[in-house]
Image (cartoon, rainbow, N blue to C red):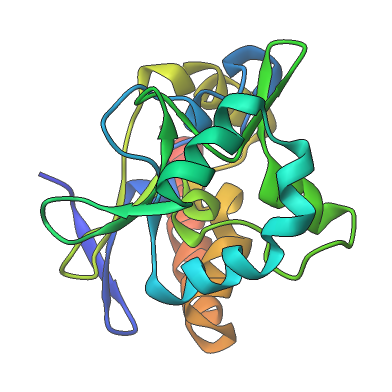
Length: 198
């Protein structure tokens, strides 16, 4: 079971501050956009409206198969538990995944990077590999597809927190992130002292 600390109103998995992580898309090929399963990326209700708003600028980037899914089933569907998620192509890649040279990337994020959209990507994707549970807790989820990211994080000295800090600030605001920064510095300092004393 995860060791948890409290930041603001949220329980936070301490591994977010201790485990190395830096996305290595060349190695993983954008696996987080194409993980097999029945459902796509979790969405908040307001995110569906945001995606619908920018859809005309995103559709031209998508594959014929993805456009067909969107035309038939829309951009989102509900799971049996009532969670909204993006639709997928054949229960595999998200409809917004665009694959170039064998690497999957997010069309929503691409449009945002180009200044064509004010919606960067679903928050659940932005937070990956951190997941927010139904109780509001933040946990680090390990995936075998992210082994290269763990290795790159070690080489760079970057933790999961460093990888998702921007997403956490987007989700919870400046006051929350200031408290999280203090926690991160405290934990990092404690680990450094332990290494120096060993």
